[in-house]
Length: 375
Image 1 (spheres, rainbow, N blue to C red):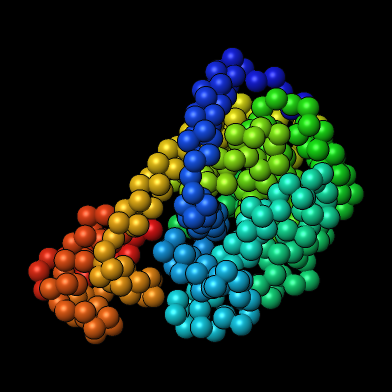
Image 2: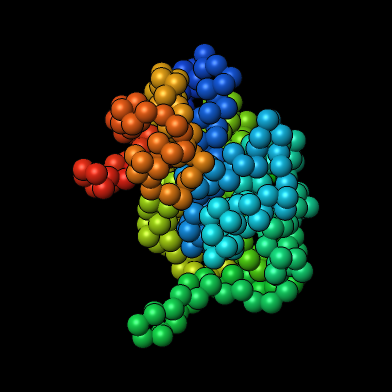
């Protein structure tokens, strides 16, 4: 069971969401494997981009897609270490920390998509392993990756114009209190997944309690959002588990970040509680229900994009590949002409086709026009 009784308003919203899930689940049953892989990749890139940018990373979804493609060639995964210098040269060494965070988050989500059911029942060892994977590419974290915190990790907000600081979150104290809270959380989660009939609420409570504990020195936000996805994929609701791999709730959390932090604060007033029944979960339940509804609507957008991509003529595909090879650049017609060897008239036609299909965005007018890739 969850730690509170959902209100009639929450129950109605859950039933509405379930109706949409059932409809989408039936719709996706007939989708070909290639399109399913495309939809899952869209969700992966969106979740990685949003979750890392919430924590102040700076890579765009277009750049993250390029990194993912660079590390996934011919159906095989290439190690980040072997491609790191190439990626840093392409995307700029000044963004090394952001790139390391993106690759770590990508690795964790890829593991969750592939192995969610195999990670049941959930254990603290699994959670610590995912945390280690999250920070594996960030060398300064080598001594604490996968280990519970040993010092206090209050979350403090600083008013930059005045220098004034305030505590946003007072999490559990390191040591026995954190260890006990995590043991209790994992034990509760495994039971609730089997017993409770609204798995989305289990996922929300699980994620919130994890964030309130803040068990690791760094990476709690990214890992908490990854654990939310894991909880959806581990549920006994077949429609939810089928659809969850194709949606990016984190994308909408990023777009509603102020509301997200406000809902988290409303639940706890920024203080860890040993008794989970003392939290006020309703604001966060409502927030996640809204984000889930928005994320479900993305599936139709992804499917239309896939259908449009399949209809592109060969010339347009060549031009599009030119942009995908240069994700950080805004290209002029002349630059595309040099890169592809295509006639200028063919390039102009391809650019118009790609712009109308929302694959590219045109910037400026006339001879000075540039184009940039859209995700």
